[in-house]
Length: 474
Image (cartoon, rainbow, N blue to C red; front, side, top):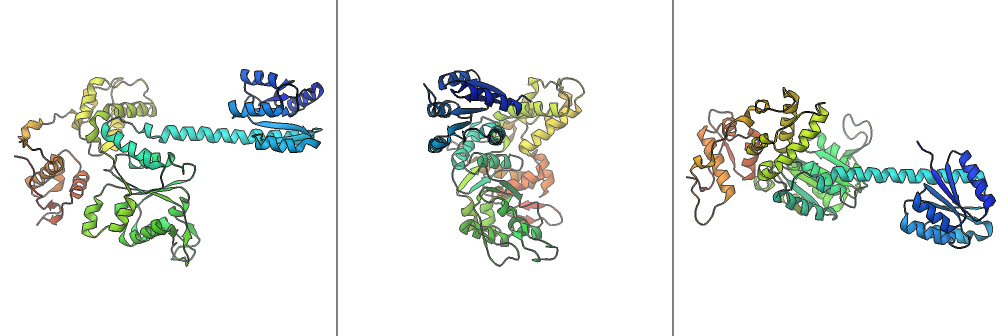
């Protein structure tokens, strides 16, 4: 590592020489200037890591030099040197932006301590700046891949909402990138320097979820051998991302509602609440409005969470983004798998666009990894694609759609297709999902989306649907 470069500015030639010698003995690279004008010329040529300057100099004074550095080279710290009798001037210089000051005659032990402290501080500042730039590149809205109108509309709303304190509810199917969007919201908010904490409400057993979320005190239950901070407390002054909020048990919904309303949490076993400042972003793939009707989700909590609702579109609704996503994942995965020379011919891209991707972006990434790993040659061939990408899909006109002159509801058409497919297989959801070329989980998700109630089918383990309102299919 190259030694830090320090510029010493003083009209006293002997002092310049002594300071240069002392600082070079400490391991620094040192250059000198006899007045402010020479210093400006030196800084323009090569900005140093630190400027050590006298206050009183002919021509451009130390204070004027400080002003110029602060306005044009704000990343360069300045330490002022001044006589003991003019300490008040040094204080004024620090108010104007100097980092520290030294009094003459210079104590060289103090000189070493001050220089070391200043350089370490600005090294850490630069590390934070670099880390922040890295986070911006990773979590900026512009790095969520896709330029479709459906996606850009959501990102525009999310970007404007990020600066607020309002709660946000993201509704999206599994695999669409809910957490990536939530992180982008956090890292573009005023809380970006504070924690971003995630909890998946559907991945933690009900009996443990309260402790994970709110924390507990020692002795509050068997096994509570010490105090534990919950996810909410960890997210204080930051953002808490509640993934799959629709899976939260009813008794915890009440406590979460109180937390959002009052900004207080109650740890398990505690006798008094704890004040917290948390911004909430929640997400779900479920139809919360249908759950409200069923009595499984609180209506008051829903409206507290959905101050700003975001509907993240599934991949099938943004097919124009698929080529860009394919290229992104292909380049990333081929490097990860040690196959940098592998080629994906553009002629194969329509195969990716024709598939509906029920598992959304997560499924697309997994499929590309499988293709990269199993490809036989240096260029991916048609035969390297999985069967479902090679299979020809039936033409839409085979459905004999009759388009009414006054328009129709696309949702009611999809709803009717679901019903007919399930009726075709006597209520067997697995067979119906396979027929529709989606996963059974995606089928159930769509059932919940349209608020279609289920009822048992006699003699089968599967479920069937109540017939919905008529759609425009013939």
